[in-house]
Length: 333
Image (cartoon, rainbow, N blue to C red):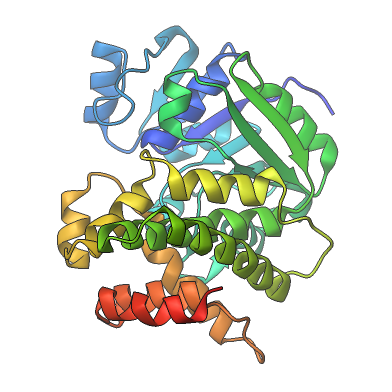
């Protein structure tokens, strides 16, 4: 496959900004869809994103910014979506051009609520994109550490490993190591589930549980993730690989993790609404916990998922966090 692919990024949050930074290491030109003209004006004036990763200096000579999603989609071969799952479909409804022949890369960690599909599946079912042209970008990798150019690792998952390898090369740099993988569905589910477990880790911290309990929680989360993914997509995979376990660990332990931060606030007694208002960023795990719970309960024989169930009960069923975690501790081992 030709390496002369043109790339476009959709979204203007911290992860989208980090992706733009990584692409600019190896690309002369990156198209960037930013919803608000006010944000574009600021980037042009100040050469950095006003709200996210403001320490990242953006080279305007490499960027083509536009508020027209169709212009950006038309210009590129690889469309990278880094829009929170809750707002994804409302943005996609603005797309009027045929994108079925494009390579679609999901950097979204969640399910599209309107369809109940993973992002890749959503593009396949709703927009006719070939499954071999669906790519998943996952970690372990925090946007904040990309901004600091700390050594980070990315996994590029695609059923077509030729595409995965070409995209992986595009993202590689002196501070980014990349690997290719063909478990697209597993990678996408792992990226979704790890945010739920990060909320659980945050809740535990906020409730006063210590490192000993956190280690047990993470060990159980790893096994629970394996059970869940095997139930929804059975194939041979090693859950201890970086794309699954590595991403889970960094999201649950890192102080950069917005999902852990959200869970910590809930554990300390914030209501869901007040915690969301306090945070300037979306905690994807909030939406993911509902999606994962519904997907699992829809199975004839649901997987055993006591951690997901506990997070769901606290966030959506108004269960008391302290009592719910007390019950959870009796199920873990």
